View 1: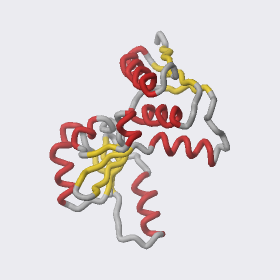
View 2 (view 1 turned 120 degrees about the vertical axis):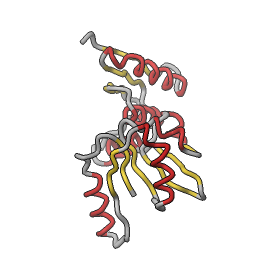
View 3 (view 1 turned 180 degrees about the horizontal axis):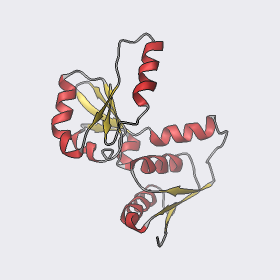
View 4 (view 1 turned 90 degrees about the horizontal axis):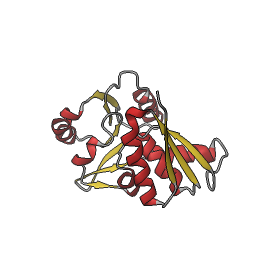
Length: 177
């Protein structure tokens, strides 16, 4: 198993996953790999040849990796971002668990149900896209996207995608700085 992205040096994923593998008695290893978008055409086949079972994907590859996948789950398709890749029946599949994990944490650890609530979300990157769609699927009443002018196009694209998913659910607010 591994993590693809850049930068990944400070990620705690390897320590967390390897500790879990050990506690479960699994013969498995999780390793971070510094990978750029330009590396993906070579890296994906190499990982498949090495019989990797699954991958996590982080910035800046959450959207770029999609073109190398055979299938996407519903949330990954909706939000156009993938953070989990796995091989199934010879196909390379992608999921987005960012939002599902966020909503689960809100409900279970935070004892907070987003149904009918209003939300302010900062940014429109891969994780934000996953969180926004999962919140909408969980019954959020409305969502406001906020970000810097340099990210205005990404904010507008996410708002448009969310409003296609659920009409009128999203608006954009950006700063002047």
